[in-house]
Amino acid sequence: MRFGFITDFLMENSDHKKTLLMEEVGAENLYANNAGYEELLTKISDGDTLVLYQIHDLASDWKDFVTRWHRLYEMGVQFKVIVDDFFSTGEYATDDQEDIMIHIAEAGYEMNNFYLNQKKISGMKKAKANGVKFGRRKVKNPENFEKYYYLWKAKKLPIKEAAAAIGMNTSTFFRHCREYTEQLEMQNKN
Image (cartoon, rainbow, N blue to C red):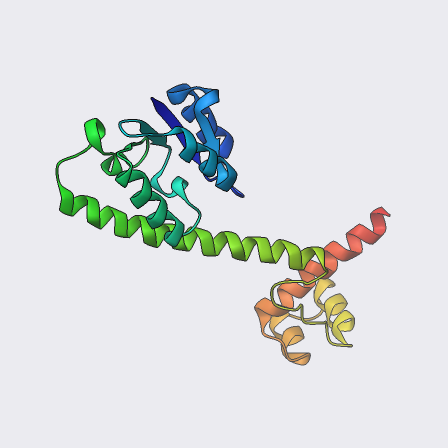
């Protein structure tokens, strides 16, 4: 019998993966996340095939991946991996064991990076919801900025001189001028 499994937390393309897996195994044999894995273990047995979209869909971290892979392999389950077919076993297997080990190590590295990125993204979303702002703070314009902005805008002063007069380099002065112009336009619209 063929079963499908996916760990789809925070994945943008999880619907695509689920659709492909349902085409392979049917909706009734598709399981997801930790609760689905526990249910899958009660149904899968020796000679059955577990279909994964990618190898790291078996678990969300390296430790769980190794544990799950080993347990299923010991049960006599064959693996078919749609994208990373070099991980497939049984009738779906490739012959080169050394190549498989290299790919497993690569998958572990990728899975660990994926998991850390998901944790970071999740933490950043929570922080933003609590009002934390990311990135470099904007430098406020000096008090005499407007005077030199209008002199430059009226073409009475070259940009280099205007920037030097308030202690900015020309690109910074120009950026501040552009932002100030946008700010004035927004005020005029309202």
